[in-house]
Length: 132
Image 1 (cartoon, rainbow, N blue to C red):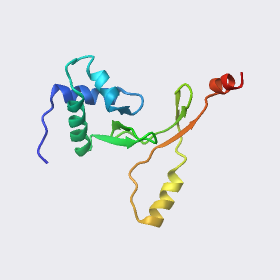
Image 2 (spheres, rainbow, N blue to C red):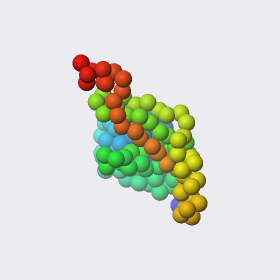
Image 3 (cartoon, helix red, strand yellow):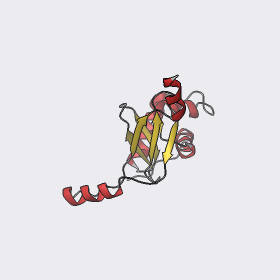
Image 4 (cartoon, helix red, strand yellow):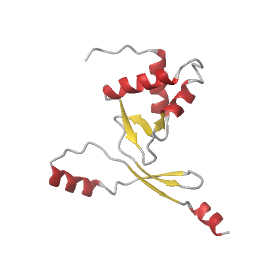
C-alpha cells in the first residue's frame, strides 16, 4: 500500500483518538479537532478515519446504539459498564470473555482478534435516585 501523507487534519484526528479515555464517535472527534482547526469539516474527519482504519492504525467499534466509535488499533480490548441514566462509565479491568472466545474459535475455526463488552444498567447513585 502506498504511504499516506500525514496532514495536519490526520494528526489532529489521531491525537484525539490517542488521548481519549474511551472510543470516540466521528462527531466527538470533529469537536476535538475543531479546537485547533476550526475549519475542519466532518467529511474530512470521515475520510481520514477511513484511511486510518484501512491502514489498521485505528479500529472501528459499532455500539448497540448503531453509532460507530473509533479507538487505537493496538489498544487492548476493553469492557465497560455504562449507566443508562447519567451515562457514567466504569472500565472492567478483567476480561470475562477470554474463555468464551477460545471456545468460539474452537467451534467455528475463526481466529478472534479482539472483542468488546458493554453492559448497561444503573449506577449506585442513579439507583438511589430512582427509588427516591
